[in-house]
Length: 415
Image (tube, rainbow, N blue to C red):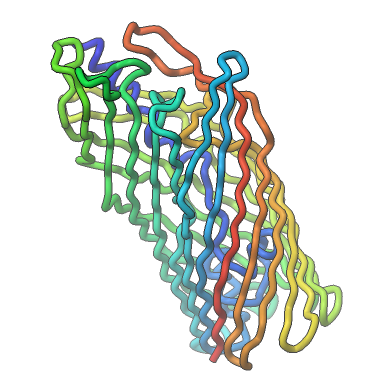
């Protein structure tokens, strides 16, 4: 019985890993249209996320930027050896953002940012070949951040503030590759944790060495989400001593990694602005995932993630007084290492192609639109850490093809 219980713990240990290696980069329509650059771009309250040090440079006393995106994604899996195939049927994710900035004077501004840097849904076909790893998973983390931006001198400012995070996760998988009840229905477990709250912080600086050049840096702290008293619900369990599963609770830690972004923007002339960001996400914090169940059993599940980089490029062109056009490109490294490619996080290195525009409806109100096409590298990969009911290590692998399309719409208001 203890062996089976430990197996159950290890089976569940991969469920929270959706937070690792999955980052939703849609924190502003103007920034996303420019390849998600923004650490040194002063054109809206989106700076609340990208670099709060820049808020004090906004021209208007009050600036608000808000928007939402629709994430349409699909993953196709195939095992050439067995001929098995599967596809995800993911509902559209809707990450959102709200940024506001208020200038008290020429040297001091206050702000508020609310955004969703982690969160989406992956739904595989029921009882597919990898259902012992995942059927479906939904993760959400909402960041709420009050901000202060202060100009130390004409050429340098600083900014930042505390971050309050509230999150939830819901995950379902089959207990094994074969276990069913007497009616032949696959035995499965759903774990759910909501209302998980923690604190972090971010800080940034913005330098203006010349009238046309800005250099920015921003750091967002690591946040460890401590899920306590989550629910584990078992279904279709056979009435046999060999499967002593019953509903229980669990505690777990979900790391949201720190990020460092440095970048620059350069105004070629009154119409053209170019931008570049380099982002380092410290996924190395995901060395292992520990889960403790109410009965005292603890599982230490090694993840082996590595820090990953993203290179972002963007351009902005002011076509007319009413219309501004934007385009961008980025190259994003995956932190997932060989042998750890689980279908909860079906992603690999990717390229993003972006574009968008702003239409000034009035002198105070603009509509911002963006789109992003993300192409993930096709990869032959496996997850090598599944232990079956006989205590055997059974790798699960195949060829993964992934793609995502993200349209977005927002508004910018100035007063």
